[in-house]
Length: 87
Image 1 (cartoon, one colour):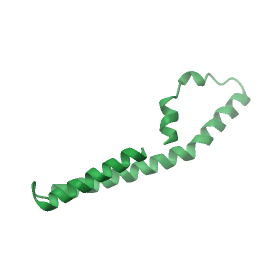
Image 2 (image 1 turned 120 degrees about the vertical axis):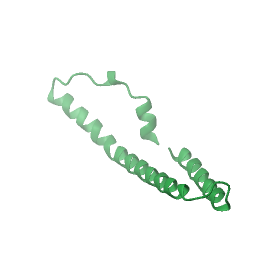
Image 3 (image 1 turned 30 degrees about the horizontal axis):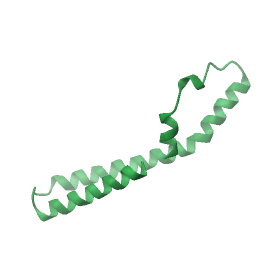
Image 4 (image 1 turned 90 degrees about the horizontal axis):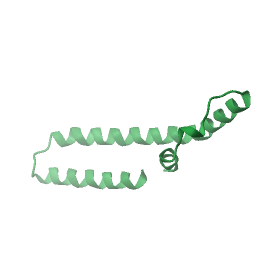
C-alpha cells in the first residue's frame, strides 16, 4: 500500500511547530489528503484480523493430523500469502 510506504519514509522533521494560520492549514491539508487512505487501510487490517480470529477459533476444534486440520492449515497459509502481497 502506498500509505505504508509513505509512513516508512515519514520524518518528524517534516513538521515543525505551528506558528501561523498558513502552517496550520498546510498541516490540515496534508492530514486530510492522507486520512481516507489511512481509514481504508485500517478497515482492511481489521477485516484481516477478524479472518484470523475466525481461523483460530475453527483451528482449536480440529484434531491435529486430521484431513480437516490439513485443509484448514492450507487455507490459512493461502490467506497469509495473499495478505502479504496486499500489504
